[in-house]
Length: 256
Image (cartoon, rainbow, N blue to C red; front, side, top):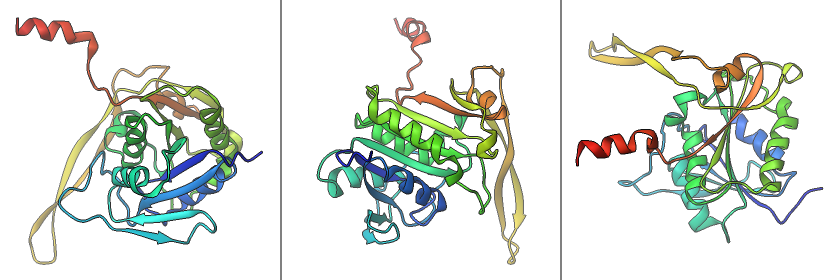
């Protein structure tokens, strides 16, 4: 039964016009009252950027039917901040970001605007989830995973969600009927072996295009990449505290 007492903020980094956020709003609307605040243009790869040197515009939009929705000229993190402090009458019970076109597994979480929005919610002490689908196709079918997305959201609303933590949820690019299940994982240690292609524009001026290959270091069976490669939806509990506690005392000894 729909619980209208739950206030759910939905945002993303692919813009308010993206198919992924349309699907997420439809699913979340069955579980509570949804308010959307999302970028007015794609903001992929923005990470945790905030707008400091330009004004941020906020406009009401009507593309989600009866759902209250706004587009913003700011970043995904700006959208969360604006929603909490300017749009909503109270802090939301849950912050949802996505569903992203393309996965945000492993260290991609550091670059992802989708996950940065969820992390911003966690920094505010709010239950937060970032959803991503490992499919870049413009024809990607997000709604086929509705049962899984709804289950993950429902649990976040029902359980005692840990403070200052968000969930990084990645869905593999397989038909919903082939999903092997849901696995709670660790973040894989992987990185981009970056390479720049040097090119010239029509005026003979050089420019660079970032490319490269993504590879895992020391593959583990409990990692998100391992789960995704085997058809599981991966969930990584993620925090914003980047302190390396294992070597804290060692570094202290350097300066004593």
